[in-house]
Image (cartoon, rainbow, N blue to C red; front, side):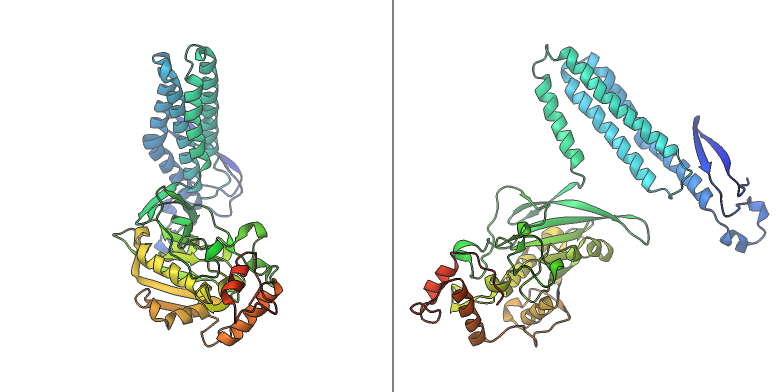
Length: 453
């Protein structure tokens, strides 16, 4: 068999089905085996087209056996059987459309797994045929409904219900995944991407916006975080939660979102876990603390998306939010505002991870805390605290250390806190923070404050 470097038409046949491929100008020549006298010639030969052709035949043959033929039979039965049992029409039509959508999905996946070759058009023909069958299913449903709607009053409601379920399944491109924790069920989703080295599909489970503490609002503003309470219903964790209230506009616009994505109710963490993480196959855990000078930043930034790191690194990635600016570090020298509650947020999140990460397939004995800039400073501070003993195994500090704290001692922090309270009108000549800390703190809880301390 010989492929010349000129434009030609090539026609192959497989089980009576004809497929046409357009071969454009090729830059090489693939000769039969007898033309190669040495092993080196075989090793240097270009087998791109041959591989593509064999791959195509293998994909079609395997799919005919386990996908296309069974799906077509199911569709055929769903179209014909309602003449026997009319009352089951909605369910049968839904089953048929579902099968067809499965068929289309399989075709798309098979096509994506093939080399990107412009002259292979058979897959397009198959996909077009599938879409025609889906359109036929819709027409069949319309025809059936018009005939039997008056006789069967519940036909419309049942059909709408079934198709609503089907539509939700179609729109929800990331399949749901549920994890059972001691606090309750957590519902996350799949994320997919391609491995640039092996071209294999990599799946990662992601759980976005998992609460680790009660919302620090109202009487809990400026206080140490309180552990989150258990929930009775499954908790939807498929969307990122807002960033903590912060000083805006920041000198680094990429650190902050618009005001719609900023809130005091922000103590949530994100979990990214490899698909194969389980109790029998526990993964190491990276606990990430973002930087930003303790007054800007969040775990919803694109640069902290842990999907690729979890999938390629085969580890679980956890990114955590913590309070910033005056809401995270305002200080009145009382239990109502002890200061450094942003650091306490990190500690509470770390305790949550140590207690619950095994439910997500993590190994709590292999937790590494890591951070950059202010996050690195926080890692250093946590490392010298006796409260973190036994909560993690390793640490990574990038561009920061506890030797440079970006802060003052208690007296300096108290003076900054006085300036913040003065700006919002919570202190005056008769009411001071040093003499009336409870009263000033109560006043500070009554408004919206995000000054940088």
